Image (cartoon, rainbow, N blue to C red; front, side, top):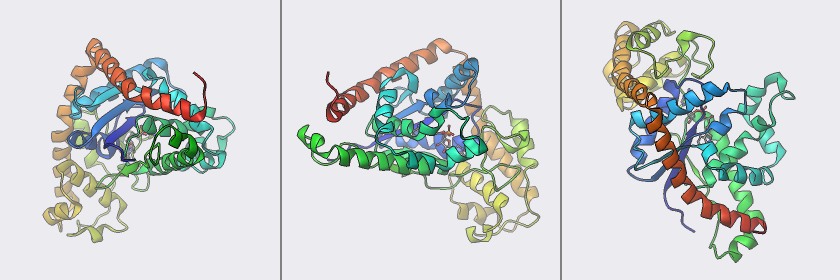
Length: 343
Ligand code: TYM
């Protein structure tokens, strides 16, 4: 069975969008529109695996959809919608809960990080989170998923679920007239610089929506002055920049800032170092601040304009959900049939 090239990705409305979300995911959604059918989701059902204030959840849902569009995702060419509008996500995730094994979920590092010492007190949804993520992707038989590095393990699990389903129901899949696998073995699209953007204050930690230090994270809605201030105050070592990538080994903060520059400018790390090798931070940081403002400010302006028009945003999300359902429903009808549900 050959699967047509289709991309799915999603972002959780659980905090303000930051530079890591932009470089690891959103920026890369745009060119994929030229080569793939593209589906970009706001995964509100994932967000509620930890407590979300309902008003914040709505605000962030609009903000993420607006960020997709402001960054260059075209709501006519791509499907943009929020997950809870397409109930098949929940339905397929239940079936996957019955395919996946407890041990697979318990091994997930993101679950362990989030649950911490407190694993008896977190929601059941947080434990089953990767199963819903597999459902997001496989409901559309997506062949590729652009994400940052932190999602790689979840995508391995998605492949494990697809393989087990294809194997467990081999006979029924064949009886349905399918040649080969029912679900594709989805590829993780996570190459290039800045696939793991680090905190500006600590190069061993990833930049995240929930960092205690205000200066560690650049938010997509930050204004120009704040972006420049955060970059100027970023932690660095005292050495000059090397002239090639190998010279960044063991220099976590330097590697992070150079990676951000490369991703924002569309260059390789070696190209950036070809330009800045031998220079100190006094030269590099202002150049990075200018570049970040140049790239992020127009997106923030457009995001603000879009979120102010909720009527228009609702229309886009409803239209997206309808088009998503049109793909999902026949696939889900096959799944029910394969599993043996009577209709
Ligand atoms: P979320 O909402 O945590 O993050 C959204 C996207 O941003 C990327 N990202 C980063 N990339 C580089 N550096 C960082 N510091 C950084 N922080 C976040 C993430 O890798 C992600 O691509 N489980 C997912 C949401 C999800 C999903 C899906 C993704 C649900 N279903 C199906 C793809 C396909 C998540 O929590 O992402």
